[in-house]
Length: 427
Ligand SMILES: Nc1nc2c(ncn2[C@@H]2O[C@H](COP(=O)(O)OP(=O)(O)OP(=O)(O)O)[C@@H](O)[C@H]2O)c(=O)[nH]1
Ligand SMILES: [Mg+2]
Image (cartoon, rainbow, N blue to C red):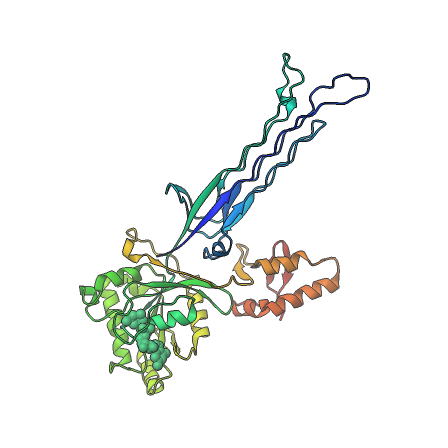
Protein backbone atom coordinates (compact mmCIF):
# COMPACT_ATOMS: atom_id res chain seq x y z
CA UNK A 1 0.00 0.00 0.00
CA UNK A 2 1.18 3.49 -0.65
CA UNK A 3 -0.17 6.86 0.23
CA UNK A 4 -0.25 9.87 -1.95
CA UNK A 5 -1.20 13.01 -0.01
CA UNK A 6 -2.12 16.60 -0.76
CA UNK A 7 -3.51 19.59 1.13
CA UNK A 8 -6.15 21.75 -0.46
CA UNK A 9 -8.55 24.57 0.37
CA UNK A 10 -12.27 24.40 -0.38
CA UNK A 11 -15.01 26.95 0.02
CA UNK A 12 -18.67 26.67 -0.77
CA UNK A 13 -20.22 29.52 -2.76
CA UNK A 14 -21.87 32.27 -0.70
CA UNK A 15 -25.63 32.46 -0.73
CA UNK A 16 -27.06 35.34 -2.75
CA UNK A 17 -28.32 38.38 -0.84
CA UNK A 18 -31.97 39.07 -0.41
CA UNK A 19 -33.24 42.35 -1.82
CA UNK A 20 -35.15 45.28 -0.40
CA UNK A 21 -37.58 46.64 -2.97
CA UNK A 22 -41.13 47.98 -3.19
CA UNK A 23 -43.76 47.75 -5.81
CA UNK A 24 -44.23 50.91 -7.77
CA UNK A 25 -47.55 50.95 -9.43
CA UNK A 26 -49.53 53.73 -10.92
CA UNK A 27 -52.11 55.10 -8.53
CA UNK A 28 -50.82 52.97 -5.62
CA UNK A 29 -49.32 55.26 -3.03
CA UNK A 30 -47.17 52.73 -1.18
CA UNK A 31 -46.62 49.49 -2.98
CA UNK A 32 -45.93 46.45 -0.84
CA UNK A 33 -42.49 44.88 -0.38
CA UNK A 34 -41.20 43.22 -3.54
CA UNK A 35 -37.59 42.20 -2.84
CA UNK A 36 -36.81 38.68 -3.93
CA UNK A 37 -34.65 36.07 -2.17
CA UNK A 38 -31.12 35.29 -3.23
CA UNK A 39 -30.12 31.94 -4.65
CA UNK A 40 -28.17 29.34 -2.68
CA UNK A 41 -24.44 29.06 -3.13
CA UNK A 42 -22.95 26.07 -4.92
CA UNK A 43 -21.39 23.37 -2.73
CA UNK A 44 -18.05 21.79 -3.45
CA UNK A 45 -18.72 18.10 -3.97
CA UNK A 46 -16.20 15.28 -4.46
CA UNK A 47 -17.26 12.47 -6.74
CA UNK A 48 -15.38 9.22 -7.31
CA UNK A 49 -14.26 8.77 -10.90
CA UNK A 50 -12.98 5.24 -11.29
CA UNK A 51 -10.73 6.12 -14.23
CA UNK A 52 -8.54 8.27 -11.96
CA UNK A 53 -5.66 6.62 -10.19
CA UNK A 54 -3.78 9.45 -8.52
CA UNK A 55 -4.19 12.78 -6.76
CA UNK A 56 -1.78 14.39 -9.19
CA UNK A 57 -4.35 16.91 -10.46
CA UNK A 58 -4.54 18.40 -6.97
CA UNK A 59 -0.87 19.26 -7.08
CA UNK A 60 -1.61 21.89 -9.69
CA UNK A 61 -4.94 23.17 -8.48
CA UNK A 62 -5.33 23.53 -4.75
CA UNK A 63 -8.22 25.99 -4.37
CA UNK A 64 -11.78 24.99 -5.09
CA UNK A 65 -14.50 27.59 -4.67
CA UNK A 66 -18.17 27.09 -5.33
CA UNK A 67 -19.99 29.82 -7.25
CA UNK A 68 -22.10 32.30 -5.28
CA UNK A 69 -25.86 32.34 -5.61
CA UNK A 70 -27.40 35.26 -7.49
CA UNK A 71 -28.77 38.15 -5.46
CA UNK A 72 -32.50 38.63 -5.16
CA UNK A 73 -34.12 41.14 -7.49
CA UNK A 74 -36.99 43.57 -7.50
CA UNK A 75 -40.50 42.62 -8.54
CA UNK A 76 -40.27 39.60 -6.26
CA UNK A 77 -37.80 37.78 -8.44
CA UNK A 78 -35.48 35.30 -6.76
CA UNK A 79 -31.83 34.92 -7.68
CA UNK A 80 -30.73 31.66 -9.20
CA UNK A 81 -28.94 29.14 -7.06
CA UNK A 82 -25.45 28.16 -8.21
CA UNK A 83 -24.91 24.55 -9.32
CA UNK A 84 -22.64 22.38 -7.20
CA UNK A 85 -18.99 22.33 -8.10
CA UNK A 86 -18.26 18.66 -8.69
CA UNK A 87 -14.61 17.66 -8.36
CA UNK A 88 -13.61 14.16 -9.55
CA UNK A 89 -11.40 12.14 -7.19
CA UNK A 90 -9.89 8.67 -7.60
CA UNK A 91 -11.34 5.66 -5.77
CA UNK A 92 -9.55 5.17 -2.43
CA UNK A 93 -9.53 8.91 -1.59
CA UNK A 94 -9.70 9.67 2.10
CA UNK A 95 -10.78 13.19 3.01
CA UNK A 96 -9.80 14.73 6.35
CA UNK A 97 -10.25 18.15 7.85
CA UNK A 98 -6.63 19.37 7.88
CA UNK A 99 -7.16 21.52 10.98
CA UNK A 100 -8.98 19.07 13.21
CA UNK A 101 -7.89 15.78 11.71
CA UNK A 102 -11.53 14.70 11.55
CA UNK A 103 -12.27 12.06 8.92
CA UNK A 104 -14.87 13.51 6.57
CA UNK A 105 -15.20 10.91 3.83
CA UNK A 106 -13.80 7.62 2.64
CA UNK A 107 -14.62 7.55 -1.05
CA UNK A 108 -14.47 4.14 -2.63
CA UNK A 109 -17.00 3.27 -5.31
CA UNK A 110 -17.54 4.92 -8.67
CA UNK A 111 -20.01 7.79 -8.48
CA UNK A 112 -19.89 8.02 -4.68
CA UNK A 113 -20.20 11.64 -3.54
CA UNK A 114 -19.35 13.74 -0.52
CA UNK A 115 -20.15 17.39 0.10
CA UNK A 116 -16.87 18.79 1.39
CA UNK A 117 -17.86 22.47 1.59
CA UNK A 118 -21.50 23.40 1.78
CA UNK A 119 -22.76 26.34 -0.24
CA UNK A 120 -24.33 29.14 1.81
CA UNK A 121 -28.08 29.44 2.26
CA UNK A 122 -29.82 32.19 0.34
CA UNK A 123 -30.68 35.49 2.01
CA UNK A 124 -34.36 36.37 2.15
CA UNK A 125 -35.78 39.44 0.45
CA UNK A 126 -37.92 41.98 2.26
CA UNK A 127 -41.12 40.39 0.99
CA UNK A 128 -40.51 37.59 3.49
CA UNK A 129 -40.32 39.98 6.40
CA UNK A 130 -43.72 41.59 5.96
CA UNK A 131 -46.06 41.20 8.95
CA UNK A 132 -49.38 42.83 9.74
CA UNK A 133 -47.50 45.09 12.15
CA UNK A 134 -44.88 45.98 9.57
CA UNK A 135 -46.31 45.59 6.09
CA UNK A 136 -43.45 47.44 4.42
CA UNK A 137 -40.23 46.20 6.04
CA UNK A 138 -36.94 47.60 4.86
CA UNK A 139 -34.96 44.60 5.87
CA UNK A 140 -33.55 41.76 3.97
CA UNK A 141 -30.97 39.11 4.70
CA UNK A 142 -27.59 38.66 3.17
CA UNK A 143 -26.73 35.25 1.90
CA UNK A 144 -24.93 32.87 4.22
CA UNK A 145 -21.22 32.56 3.48
CA UNK A 146 -20.19 29.21 2.08
CA UNK A 147 -18.42 26.76 4.35
CA UNK A 148 -14.64 27.06 4.27
CA UNK A 149 -12.15 24.33 5.09
CA UNK A 150 -8.64 23.12 4.67
CA UNK A 151 -8.64 19.51 3.59
CA UNK A 152 -6.08 16.81 3.56
CA UNK A 153 -6.55 14.20 0.85
CA UNK A 154 -4.91 10.84 0.95
CA UNK A 155 -5.01 8.09 -1.59
CA UNK A 156 -4.55 4.51 -0.56
CA UNK A 157 -3.85 2.02 -3.29
CA UNK A 158 -2.53 -1.51 -3.18
CA UNK A 159 0.06 -2.64 -5.67
CA UNK A 160 -1.48 -4.68 -8.45
CA UNK A 161 1.88 -6.13 -9.36
CA UNK A 162 4.89 -7.02 -7.23
CA UNK A 163 8.44 -7.43 -8.56
CA UNK A 164 10.13 -10.31 -6.78
CA UNK A 165 13.56 -11.84 -7.13
CA UNK A 166 17.01 -12.11 -5.60
CA UNK A 167 18.71 -8.90 -4.45
CA UNK A 168 20.36 -6.79 -7.17
CA UNK A 169 18.59 -8.49 -10.10
CA UNK A 170 17.25 -5.06 -11.13
CA UNK A 171 13.76 -4.84 -9.62
CA UNK A 172 14.07 -1.19 -8.65
CA UNK A 173 15.74 -0.33 -11.94
CA UNK A 174 12.83 -1.91 -13.79
CA UNK A 175 10.31 0.04 -11.70
CA UNK A 176 12.18 3.26 -12.40
CA UNK A 177 12.01 2.82 -16.19
CA UNK A 178 8.31 1.93 -16.46
CA UNK A 179 6.93 4.39 -13.88
CA UNK A 180 7.68 7.85 -12.55
CA UNK A 181 8.85 6.35 -9.25
CA UNK A 182 12.50 7.01 -8.37
CA UNK A 183 13.59 4.22 -6.05
CA UNK A 184 17.14 3.89 -4.83
CA UNK A 185 19.26 1.73 -7.12
CA UNK A 186 22.65 0.31 -6.20
CA UNK A 187 24.85 -2.70 -6.79
CA UNK A 188 24.71 -3.96 -3.20
CA UNK A 189 22.10 -6.32 -1.77
CA UNK A 190 18.98 -5.09 0.01
CA UNK A 191 19.11 -1.62 -1.44
CA UNK A 192 15.33 -1.61 -1.20
CA UNK A 193 14.10 -1.88 2.37
CA UNK A 194 10.47 -0.89 1.90
CA UNK A 195 8.55 -1.25 -1.33
CA UNK A 196 8.31 1.67 -3.70
CA UNK A 197 5.24 2.07 -5.77
CA UNK A 198 4.71 3.50 -9.21
CA UNK A 199 1.90 3.81 -11.68
CA UNK A 200 2.46 2.12 -15.03
CA UNK A 201 0.82 3.45 -18.17
CA UNK A 202 0.94 0.74 -20.85
CA UNK A 203 1.41 1.56 -24.54
CA UNK A 204 -2.30 0.84 -25.06
CA UNK A 205 -3.30 3.15 -22.21
CA UNK A 206 -4.07 0.78 -19.40
CA UNK A 207 -2.66 1.56 -16.00
CA UNK A 208 -1.76 -0.38 -12.90
CA UNK A 209 0.29 0.01 -9.74
CA UNK A 210 3.64 -1.76 -9.52
CA UNK A 211 5.86 -2.23 -6.47
CA UNK A 212 9.54 -3.23 -6.31
CA UNK A 213 9.62 -5.55 -3.36
CA UNK A 214 12.79 -5.95 -1.34
CA UNK A 215 15.05 -8.78 -2.48
CA UNK A 216 14.34 -12.32 -1.36
CA UNK A 217 16.98 -14.87 -0.56
CA UNK A 218 17.05 -18.52 0.31
CA UNK A 219 15.61 -19.03 3.77
CA UNK A 220 13.47 -15.90 3.60
CA UNK A 221 10.42 -17.92 4.55
CA UNK A 222 12.27 -18.81 7.77
CA UNK A 223 13.08 -15.19 8.40
CA UNK A 224 16.51 -15.01 6.77
CA UNK A 225 17.45 -11.66 5.21
CA UNK A 226 14.47 -9.39 5.51
CA UNK A 227 12.35 -12.51 5.57
CA UNK A 228 8.71 -12.52 6.48
CA UNK A 229 8.33 -8.80 6.31
CA UNK A 230 8.79 -8.94 2.56
CA UNK A 231 6.79 -12.01 1.83
CA UNK A 232 3.86 -10.23 3.44
CA UNK A 233 4.00 -7.57 0.76
CA UNK A 234 3.81 -10.17 -1.97
CA UNK A 235 0.60 -11.52 -0.52
CA UNK A 236 -1.01 -8.23 -1.38
CA UNK A 237 -0.25 -8.24 -5.06
CA UNK A 238 -2.38 -9.85 -7.74
CA UNK A 239 0.29 -10.69 -10.28
CA UNK A 240 3.84 -11.69 -9.46
CA UNK A 241 6.56 -10.49 -11.77
CA UNK A 242 9.59 -12.65 -11.15
CA UNK A 243 12.77 -10.79 -12.12
CA UNK A 244 15.84 -12.85 -12.93
CA UNK A 245 19.40 -11.75 -13.61
CA UNK A 246 19.74 -13.69 -16.86
CA UNK A 247 23.41 -12.76 -17.14
CA UNK A 248 24.15 -14.50 -13.85
CA UNK A 249 26.21 -11.45 -12.87
CA UNK A 250 26.84 -12.74 -9.39
CA UNK A 251 27.71 -16.26 -10.48
CA UNK A 252 24.35 -17.88 -9.71
CA UNK A 253 22.46 -19.99 -12.21
CA UNK A 254 19.29 -18.22 -13.46
CA UNK A 255 17.09 -21.32 -13.37
CA UNK A 256 18.35 -22.15 -9.91
CA UNK A 257 17.38 -18.62 -8.80
CA UNK A 258 13.95 -19.13 -10.27
CA UNK A 259 13.37 -22.38 -8.38
CA UNK A 260 14.71 -21.04 -5.11
CA UNK A 261 12.52 -17.96 -5.08
CA UNK A 262 9.44 -19.96 -5.93
CA UNK A 263 10.34 -22.41 -3.18
CA UNK A 264 10.48 -19.53 -0.69
CA UNK A 265 7.15 -18.22 -1.93
CA UNK A 266 5.46 -21.58 -1.52
CA UNK A 267 7.09 -22.19 1.89
CA UNK A 268 5.62 -18.95 3.07
CA UNK A 269 2.20 -19.50 1.59
CA UNK A 270 1.78 -22.30 -0.90
CA UNK A 271 -1.14 -20.44 -2.47
CA UNK A 272 1.22 -17.77 -3.73
CA UNK A 273 2.18 -20.11 -6.54
CA UNK A 274 -1.41 -20.13 -7.76
CA UNK A 275 -1.05 -16.48 -8.53
CA UNK A 276 -0.24 -15.55 -12.13
CA UNK A 277 3.51 -15.24 -12.51
CA UNK A 278 5.41 -13.60 -15.31
CA UNK A 279 9.12 -14.21 -15.65
CA UNK A 280 11.28 -11.29 -16.64
CA UNK A 281 14.76 -12.15 -17.86
CA UNK A 282 16.66 -8.96 -17.07
CA UNK A 283 20.17 -7.74 -17.91
CA UNK A 284 19.91 -9.08 -21.46
CA UNK A 285 22.46 -6.42 -22.46
CA UNK A 286 25.18 -8.34 -20.61
CA UNK A 287 27.46 -10.96 -22.14
CA UNK A 288 26.25 -14.51 -21.69
CA UNK A 289 22.62 -13.53 -21.18
CA UNK A 290 21.45 -14.76 -24.61
CA UNK A 291 23.01 -18.21 -24.12
CA UNK A 292 21.63 -18.45 -20.60
CA UNK A 293 18.18 -17.53 -21.85
CA UNK A 294 18.14 -20.39 -24.35
CA UNK A 295 18.96 -22.89 -21.61
CA UNK A 296 16.56 -21.26 -19.19
CA UNK A 297 13.66 -21.49 -21.62
CA UNK A 298 14.32 -25.19 -22.12
CA UNK A 299 14.35 -25.75 -18.38
CA UNK A 300 11.22 -23.77 -17.59
CA UNK A 301 9.39 -25.37 -20.55
CA UNK A 302 6.20 -23.45 -21.26
CA UNK A 303 5.05 -23.16 -17.68
CA UNK A 304 5.45 -19.40 -17.45
CA UNK A 305 5.67 -16.62 -20.02
CA UNK A 306 9.24 -15.32 -20.23
CA UNK A 307 10.06 -11.78 -21.35
CA UNK A 308 13.64 -10.90 -22.21
CA UNK A 309 14.41 -7.30 -21.27
CA UNK A 310 17.11 -4.92 -20.26
CA UNK A 311 16.04 -2.36 -17.70
CA UNK A 312 19.31 -0.61 -18.35
CA UNK A 313 18.88 -0.14 -22.10
CA UNK A 314 15.07 -0.11 -21.85
CA UNK A 315 14.48 -2.91 -24.33
CA UNK A 316 11.67 -5.45 -24.40
CA UNK A 317 9.55 -3.50 -21.94
CA UNK A 318 6.36 -2.83 -23.96
CA UNK A 319 5.44 -6.46 -24.54
CA UNK A 320 6.13 -7.25 -20.91
CA UNK A 321 3.81 -4.47 -19.75
CA UNK A 322 1.02 -5.51 -22.13
CA UNK A 323 1.18 -9.07 -20.83
CA UNK A 324 1.06 -7.90 -17.21
CA UNK A 325 -1.99 -5.75 -17.98
CA UNK A 326 -3.67 -8.73 -19.69
CA UNK A 327 -3.03 -10.96 -16.69
CA UNK A 328 -4.40 -8.32 -14.31
CA UNK A 329 -7.61 -8.11 -16.26
CA UNK A 330 -8.33 -11.76 -15.62
CA UNK A 331 -7.15 -11.90 -12.02
CA UNK A 332 -9.35 -11.26 -9.01
CA UNK A 333 -8.30 -9.43 -5.89
CA UNK A 334 -7.10 -11.66 -3.07
CA UNK A 335 -8.73 -11.16 0.28
CA UNK A 336 -6.31 -9.91 2.92
CA UNK A 337 -6.25 -11.34 6.40
CA UNK A 338 -5.07 -8.22 8.13
CA UNK A 339 -4.79 -4.51 7.84
CA UNK A 340 -1.54 -3.19 6.40
CA UNK A 341 0.83 -1.82 8.98
CA UNK A 342 2.79 1.41 9.00
CA UNK A 343 5.93 -0.16 7.59
CA UNK A 344 4.07 -0.96 4.41
CA UNK A 345 3.21 2.61 3.71
CA UNK A 346 5.59 4.51 1.52
CA UNK A 347 5.31 7.94 0.04
CA UNK A 348 5.00 8.19 -3.66
CA UNK A 349 5.04 11.15 -5.95
CA UNK A 350 3.63 10.66 -9.36
CA UNK A 351 3.77 13.23 -12.11
CA UNK A 352 2.65 11.16 -15.10
CA UNK A 353 0.02 12.48 -17.43
CA UNK A 354 -3.50 11.23 -17.73
CA UNK A 355 -3.99 9.02 -20.77
CA UNK A 356 -5.84 10.62 -23.67
CA UNK A 357 -8.39 7.86 -23.69
CA UNK A 358 -9.35 4.65 -21.99
CA UNK A 359 -10.89 1.48 -23.27
CA UNK A 360 -13.16 -0.67 -21.15
CA UNK A 361 -15.68 -3.36 -21.77
CA UNK A 362 -19.37 -2.62 -21.18
CA UNK A 363 -21.55 -5.23 -19.47
CA UNK A 364 -23.01 -5.92 -22.92
CA UNK A 365 -19.52 -6.79 -24.25
CA UNK A 366 -19.37 -3.56 -26.21
CA UNK A 367 -16.03 -1.69 -26.29
CA UNK A 368 -16.41 1.55 -24.40
CA UNK A 369 -14.16 4.51 -25.18
CA UNK A 370 -13.84 7.32 -22.69
CA UNK A 371 -11.54 10.18 -21.81
CA UNK A 372 -11.78 13.93 -21.96
CA UNK A 373 -10.07 14.35 -25.33
CA UNK A 374 -12.35 11.82 -27.03
CA UNK A 375 -15.40 13.29 -25.38
CA UNK A 376 -14.40 16.78 -26.45
CA UNK A 377 -13.99 15.70 -30.07
CA UNK A 378 -17.28 13.83 -29.81
CA UNK A 379 -19.07 16.92 -28.53
CA UNK A 380 -17.72 19.01 -31.38
CA UNK A 381 -18.93 16.61 -34.06
CA UNK A 382 -22.21 17.04 -35.86
CA UNK A 383 -23.33 13.48 -36.44
CA UNK A 384 -25.99 14.49 -38.97
CA UNK A 385 -23.33 15.20 -41.51
CA UNK A 386 -21.27 12.45 -43.01
CA UNK A 387 -18.18 14.59 -43.59
CA UNK A 388 -17.94 15.43 -39.95
CA UNK A 389 -18.43 11.78 -38.94
CA UNK A 390 -15.58 10.84 -41.25
CA UNK A 391 -13.46 13.54 -39.72
CA UNK A 392 -14.25 12.23 -36.25
CA UNK A 393 -13.16 8.68 -37.13
CA UNK A 394 -9.94 10.11 -38.55
CA UNK A 395 -9.35 12.00 -35.31
CA UNK A 396 -9.85 8.79 -33.33
CA UNK A 397 -7.36 6.98 -35.50
CA UNK A 398 -4.76 9.67 -35.04
CA UNK A 399 -5.18 9.38 -31.27
CA UNK A 400 -4.24 5.71 -31.64
CA UNK A 401 -7.68 4.41 -30.76
CA UNK A 402 -7.88 1.88 -33.61
CA UNK A 403 -4.54 0.39 -32.78
CA UNK A 404 -5.33 0.18 -29.09
CA UNK A 405 -8.67 -1.49 -29.79
CA UNK A 406 -6.98 -4.07 -31.97
CA UNK A 407 -4.43 -4.69 -29.26
CA UNK A 408 -7.21 -5.36 -26.81
CA UNK A 409 -8.70 -7.92 -29.20
CA UNK A 410 -11.41 -5.93 -30.99
CA UNK A 411 -12.47 -7.55 -34.27
CA UNK A 412 -14.12 -6.15 -37.40
CA UNK A 413 -17.83 -5.76 -36.77
CA UNK A 414 -17.52 -5.34 -32.97
CA UNK A 415 -19.53 -2.50 -31.50
CA UNK A 416 -17.67 0.46 -30.03
CA UNK A 417 -19.42 3.04 -27.87
CA UNK A 418 -18.54 6.64 -27.04
CA UNK A 419 -20.96 8.16 -24.57
CA UNK A 420 -24.22 7.04 -26.22
CA UNK A 421 -23.00 6.90 -29.79
CA UNK A 422 -22.26 3.42 -31.18
CA UNK A 423 -20.38 2.43 -34.28
CA UNK A 424 -18.88 -0.63 -35.86
CA UNK A 425 -15.18 -1.30 -35.52
CA UNK A 426 -13.49 -1.72 -38.87
CA UNK A 427 -9.83 -1.87 -39.77
N1 LIG B 1 23.71 -4.42 -17.12
C1 LIG B 1 22.55 -4.24 -16.49
N2 LIG B 1 22.55 -3.85 -15.19
C2 LIG B 1 21.36 -3.68 -14.57
C3 LIG B 1 20.14 -3.90 -15.26
N3 LIG B 1 19.14 -3.66 -14.38
C4 LIG B 1 19.74 -3.32 -13.21
N4 LIG B 1 21.07 -3.33 -13.32
C5 LIG B 1 22.04 -3.00 -12.27
O1 LIG B 1 21.92 -3.95 -11.22
C6 LIG B 1 22.20 -3.35 -9.94
C7 LIG B 1 21.05 -3.62 -8.97
O2 LIG B 1 19.89 -2.95 -9.42
P1 LIG B 1 18.65 -2.67 -8.47
O3 LIG B 1 17.57 -2.17 -9.36
O4 LIG B 1 19.04 -1.83 -7.31
O5 LIG B 1 18.33 -4.15 -7.99
P2 LIG B 1 17.18 -4.66 -6.98
O6 LIG B 1 16.71 -5.93 -7.51
O7 LIG B 1 16.19 -3.59 -6.75
O8 LIG B 1 18.04 -4.92 -5.68
P3 LIG B 1 17.59 -4.93 -4.11
O9 LIG B 1 16.76 -3.73 -3.86
O10 LIG B 1 18.87 -4.88 -3.37
O11 LIG B 1 16.87 -6.20 -3.90
C8 LIG B 1 22.41 -1.89 -10.21
O12 LIG B 1 23.77 -1.63 -10.25
C9 LIG B 1 21.78 -1.67 -11.59
O13 LIG B 1 22.37 -0.61 -12.30
C10 LIG B 1 20.18 -4.30 -16.65
O14 LIG B 1 19.16 -4.49 -17.32
N5 LIG B 1 21.41 -4.45 -17.19
MG1 LIG C 1 15.64 -2.59 -5.10
